[in-house]
Structure formats: C-alpha cells, structure tokens
Length: 242
Ligand code: ADP
Ligand code: MG
Image 1 (cartoon, protein in one colour):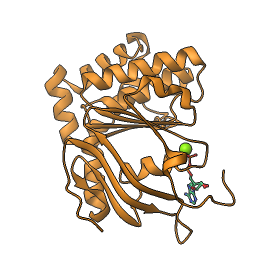
Image 2 (spheres, protein in one colour; image 1 turned 90 degrees about the horizontal axis):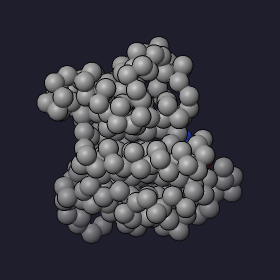
Image 3 (cartoon, helix red, strand yellow; image 1 turned 120 degrees about the horizontal axis):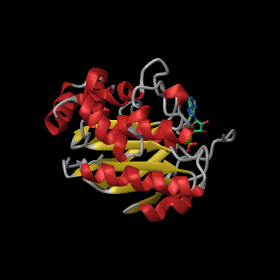
C-alpha cells in the first residue's frame, strides 16, 4: 500500500478502503475520497449502495477491512476501539435518519447530551455561551425551536422539530465533523431546503466540516462538493440489494 500522509486540513481522507459485514463479501470499495476542513460534502446514491456504511466507517463505528479511513489526520483503521470512541465523542456530531433522540429527556437535555460524554465539547459550549444550557438554547433558537418547546419531551414534537433538535445535538460544542444520514427523507421539498440551509449555516458558524448523505441527488446544489457513491463504490453488486 502506498504511504498516505495524514493532514489535519483534510477532514476526511479515505484511500484503498474495503469493507464488508461479518464474513460476507465486500460491499464497499473506494479507491479515494477526500473532504477538506470546513467543506460541505454531499454523498448520494441509490438505497443499498453503502451510504450509511460509509458514514459508520467515517465515524469510527465500523472498521475497514483494508485501507485508510482518517478523520482530522487520525487513521481510525489502526486504532483500538476506545480511541475511536474518544475521537467520535470529542470531534463528531451525528444526525441519524431516525434522529435517535432520547424520549424521556427534554428538548434542551437532548441537545446537550454530547457534552455529557465529552469534556472537550462541554468546555467549548461553556466557553461560547457561559453554560451548556445556554449553548443548547442558542442553537435551538437558531434552528427554529423556540423557548416554549425547550422543556418539552421530544416525543411531543413534530418530525420536523425533532430533526432540528437532532441537528442542535450534533452541533453543540462545535465538533470538527458533522455527519448526517438522510435526515430530510421524511420532509417535503420546502422544509427539506429550509432544514439543509439552517444546518449548513450553523455548521458554518461552528466551522464544522459536513458530510451529508442522501439518495436524492437533487440536494447536491446546497453543497460544496458532491460524490456519487453508486459510481465510486467498486465493490461487486450484492445479489440481495436493499
Ligand atoms: P444505504 O445507506 O446506501 O442504503 P447501507 O450502507 O445501509 O446502504 O447498506 C449497504 C449494503 O450493506 C446493503 O446491501 C445492506 O443490505 C448491507 N448491510 C447494511 N447493514 C448491514 C448489517 N448490519 N449487516 C449486514 N449487511 C448489512
Ligand atoms: Mg442508509
């Protein structure tokens, strides 16, 4: 394998990646994918082409079989799982397709959650606005969640509102990298556009790099770069594609 120089200016650096689940065949093979710091990257492709798998590799939840998956200059592929967990908690904000909010916590508690698991993000939230709660409140307002909703349970909110809470949670404590997995698939076109523009503008304020995936290629116009994963992924088609 060629020597790959790691560069913290490259938020995501993937080369020679191969991944498959368990003992199954490779489902993801990518010769190269780079995202520069502060860039907003869009990854698209049909259902089953490996978008969620790619994000799990970038977030250090899954580990490559072969090749380099580096974020912020650190090669996750050679790290122990505790080290990957640390990097993820301190430097990565996730927005999942199903949001994964905690139902028994309030809106503001959900948005504050990453600061419980990362001293670094806690410190950055406190430094920015005096307290984690104030930081969460500012982000929530910026994302269109008013004061009257802050102490409500997230289960009382509409899908669109829950998604904004999930975005606030991803952005709190200004993580260097924000990973979003089809967070707009349940929205109509206008709300989708509005959500993406709010998310990108807040990510810009936090100076976070964004990697956003969707099956809907028409969203590419919102982003700095667009990557067709269906095309880039050279693993053989699975016979039972989802
Ligand atoms: P996308 O997000 O683009 O729809 P995924 O990354 O979820 O695609 O899935 C890529 C391929 O990996 C699909 O063929 C899917 O069936 C398979 N896959 C996804 N998750 C698992 C898993 N936990 N175990 C085994 N196969 C999986
Ligand atoms: Mg997916």
